[in-house]
Length: 287
Picture 1 (cartoon, rainbow, N blue to C red):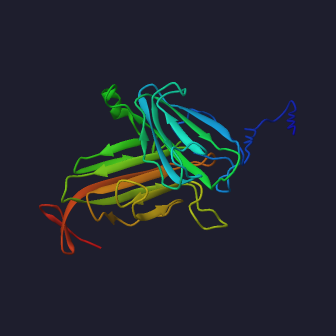
Picture 2 (cartoon, helix red, strand yellow):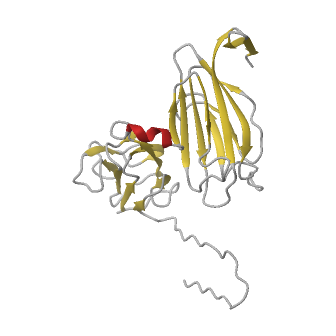
Picture 3 (cartoon, rainbow, N blue to C red):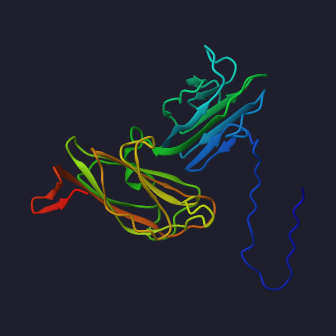
């Protein structure tokens, strides 16, 4: 395939981007703030004799978290046929973090450095659906605690009330990011969440779903917990109240259109029956 671009001596515009991809892409070097990796051909059965390596590099002040969304490989004791292996560094000589096969999703993995190597291998027969995983960088609070205040995309919030927003808000947010805000309060509290501003890419006109850029809220601390809602465009989410003391907010964006993003505020509340006490003078109904 060849692509030819011509321009003349007169008017000029922004031009174009071309993205080349293949369902059988296998491995590579990933340097973004977050991203997704999957076995060749996923969610179709992966090919035999695959040998893929993804080297993930994030900033020097961060570590890498890897979470598997789906996992189905050939199963055998010792995982010697088809497997995913993880290493705490850029090569297989670094500390081995785990070797996985079968249909049980591996646990979330957190590195001790800013690099992670993911290796996928399959043998000559018997396959499966493969795997899909996402990674994101988290500031290394042990070695670089002073950088926490600059982290816009991965935060753990524990104050009884607070505010947060999409990166660069009210300017446009970056493309290709996967940001997590994990709100965890003391036992006994529930969390009331508001979105004063929501300005994202619109829904997919064909599926009427938030397939491009979206904000999702989960009633817990992981994406396996109950989804309270997913929003995009200029939709105005209702105020939300968690069932316990944890909420997870996830911002996902694709490689194309970007907008201002969102701003959010939360309060810790104590709920008795259908009433939630926000402060000594304020009571709100529990929906």
